[in-house]
Image (tube, rainbow, N blue to C red; front, side, top):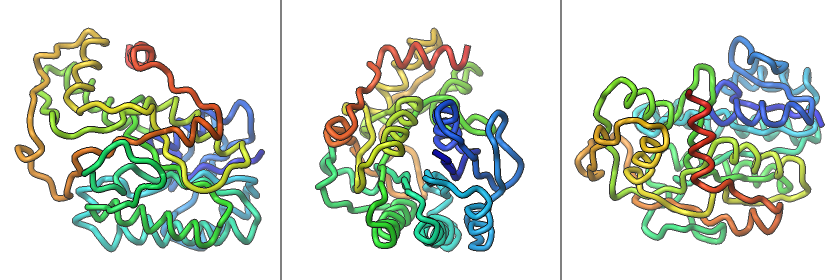
Amino acid sequence: MRVLVTGSAGQIGWRIARHLKDRHHVIAAVRTGNIEGVESVEMDITQPFSIRLAVDRTMPDAVVHCAAMTSADECEKERDACWHVNVEGTRALAEECKTDGARMVYVSTDLVFDGEKGNYAEEDAPNPLSHYAKSKLAGERVVAEILPDAVIARTAIVYGKGGVPPRGFAVWLVDALRAGKKVPLFTDQFRSHFYLEDCARAVGLLTEGKQNGLFHLSPGWRQSRHEFGLAVARAMGLDERLIEAVSMKDVPSDAPRPKDCSLANGKLVRATGFTPTPFADTLKMLKREFF
């Protein structure tokens, strides 16, 4: 297939493009520049003409849409910009996919839930707290309305090296610990931390398959941010004493934080045969990415 991956300079888009390029003709859509080792095309998700030009030039069979404004705090402060990128940009891209007959996989977020329940399945009603999460849920609904056969993939928080430059929670955590800095991590916020390559593999299965509709992408278990940070530090031989146990109320934030947005992955497993890599093995793989 010809697969266009938007947001390919970002952590998830970068890894998806890398994961798929050995089996498919992958084109990385970036705002400026290019992605090393992958054919690239410039596309500005805020400009409908730019989207139309990129899709017309690349003629994709499938579009994996990762481009988004993703900082919850930034989205809270820049609400119009967030909506323009995450909703209106998604709408314009979905319309182009409809016109050109391209399959679409829209990458969404576990943060569409309010965190009061945890272990969320696809049947659970979303209730986003932050403006970022509200914009991503609105993007889901736009895609479903325009492209009933699209895939909407809500992914858990990911960890792994990806992006230009590399970014994400694991990069921030490892860099801080290497520098001897103290790292405050929440004991009362729980997520389904998902290894980045597993996330790319799950998205790949949905892109290549015949499924449509809503899927939750996760390893199927939950940890507090603090538990996860300690496990990473131990696996990498870094000083876990630098990791401080804190509560969400102790750290100010512009965006509201849900308590438990962990995701169940049963539907994904049944539909695709996806098997998550054991957590201990992902930590070994993560260490090889950094050392």
